[in-house]
Amino acid sequence: MKIAMPVKPKSESYVLSPAFGKAKFFLIYDMDTENYEIVENKYLNGRDVANLLSVNKVNVVITNHIGGGAYKHLVDLGMKAFFTELKNEPFEKILDEFKRGNLKEITPQMFILLPQHDHHH
Image (cartoon, rainbow, N blue to C red; front, side, top):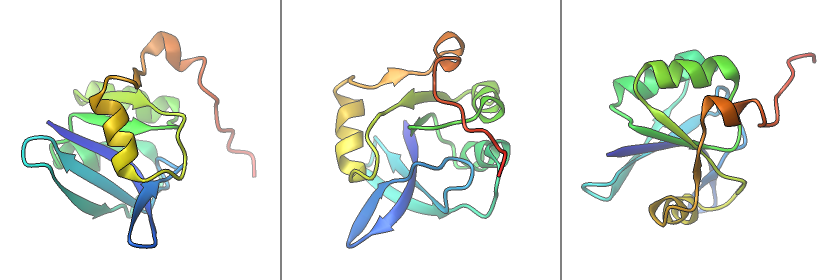
């Protein structure tokens, strides 16, 4: 199983990025090999990011923010999304929370309760 999360570089490691579609990098962790790779995100919207993750054979996405279109597209591509309240935390800590079953899967019903980002700049 492969798990992806939006990350940003911080000192010697990577921390969870609060962005999803506009995150510059995604960390893709392979549960079988316990290795990870960093994939650069050149896209600016969640649907394109979902496609990028799908091409990389990702099964699960962990994030603390995702838009409705991106969420629906992830699900349509066969991926699951999990929500974490942790921000700017080392990716290892978030992976550990996931492995322990402490993160909630985002469902369409739950989705309407998540904070929405409005695009009026």
